[in-house]
Each structure stands twice: as C-alpha cells, then as structure tokens.
Length: 146
Ligand SMILES: Nc1ncnc2c1ncn2[C@@H]1O[C@H](COP(=O)(O)OP(=O)(O)OP(=O)(O)O)[C@@H](O)[C@H]1O
Ligand SMILES: [Mg+2]
Image (cartoon, rainbow, N blue to C red; front, side, top):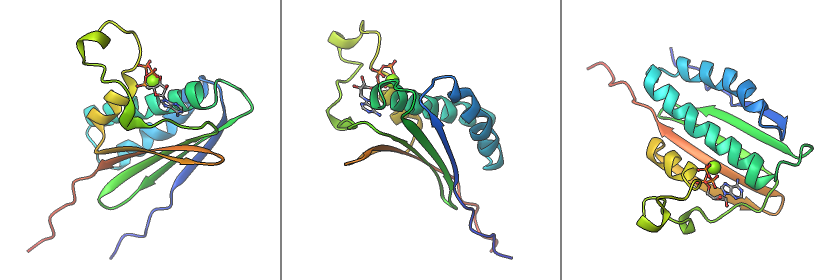
C-alpha cells in the first residue's frame, strides 16, 4: 500500500529565544521518525536552531511581537524546513567566508556556514512581508525490491 502524503507540521511563535527549546521538542521527535541516525539528527537540529536564532536576532531584531514560523515538511526523498521572519533577509551568497584568515578571530558569522555543511541546500527567499530561510536535507530512498 502506498504511504499517504505527509502534511507539513507548522509552528508559529513570538520572537523569544526561549521558544527554540519548545520547537526542538517537535523537531527532534520528527527527525527520529524520518530514520535519520541520532548523530545526523543532532547535527540537523543544530543547523535548524541556528536558522531560527538568526530569524529572531537578525530578521525580527528580537522584537517580541513579530512572529517566526517554522514549517517541517517530510517528503519521500528529502526533509524541508522553512523558517520565516519579518525582516528584509540577506543575500547568503554575499556573506564573508568565516574560514578566511582575516575572519578566523571574529566571534560570529559561522551559523550559515555550519548550515551549509549539514544541509544539502540552504537558500533564502525574500518577499515584501519578510524572508524565508529554506533548508533541505536529502533522505536515502530505499531501493525497491527486484
Ligand atoms: N534571517 C535573517 N535575516 C536577516 N539577516 C540575516 C538572517 N540570517 C542571517 N543574516 C545575516 O547573515 C549574517 C551571518 O549569519 P550567521 O548565522 O552565519 O552569523 P551570525 O548570526 O552573525 O553569528 P553566529 O556565528 O553566532 O551565528 C548575520 O550576521 C546577518 O547579518
Ligand atoms: Mg547566526
């Protein structure tokens, strides 16, 4: 029997870094059911957490009544996470490379780099109302029986 299409799980919260732990409860449970290993699941979660922290800090500038919306979408061949904020977004391709010698001692600027290491795709969509960080992780598709 074919599996039914799984609907996205959507969480919306105020801008408050304390909500990240709450979203983790749902996100971590999700990852377990998508048959990522514990280690992959932890790395994926760290990347998602970086994305949510960026949405709250840089996108919504920590303004509490601005919402952050996180959408988890499991697909057959990939897991997609969308993180929406109300800020102008940023051109991810134009960010300084944290591994260049002149940037090595700078404290920040590693979140997006880390997300790129963990995910198969990282991009940002910018619209008039805000911006959406899109993270995609491929899933191993099981070989069909011969
Ligand atoms: N959602 C967002 N909206 C607007 N700007 C963003 C957003 N996410 C990232 N940025 C910009 O991209 C830069 C790089 O983000 P990155 O997460 O790599 O570093 P950081 O947040 O400055 O430091 P850290 O290493 O602590 O994460 C940020 O400093 C910010 O200017
Ligand atoms: Mg960051």
